[in-house]
Length: 140
Image (tube, rainbow, N blue to C red; front, side):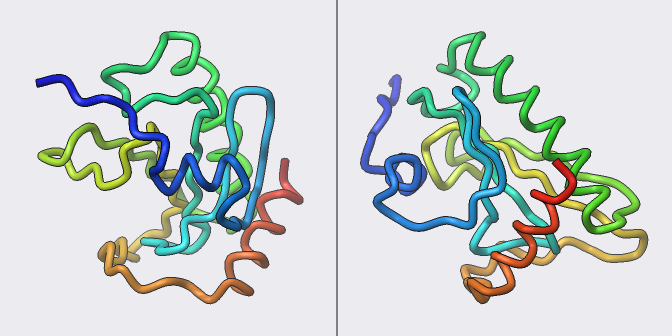
């Protein structure tokens, strides 16, 4: 069964400005913003503006623009937080861990000896998110 894109998902609402976000970057193709339930300091999401459920139904040009933005955000986030590395994750369908059905990429600065926090459902303080967003913006 092929699933269809549902434009009532939370990322579509963020893209339309119906839900606030701590935005880091925007161009004609993508928006990047802080994950409200971060698994690590500086956890950022890169979301294409084009409606795609996930990698499996995205147009090649959407993927190209998205991964170019992921690289830009990863470089800036690594510098902004003096991270030792960066994890990039992307999930497709529930069995793979996808919970929001709009294509998105997780960019998470990583530090030697520091494990990722579980995706707990606990929201981060909006002020912390805003401060972290400013650190990344300063490196872009």
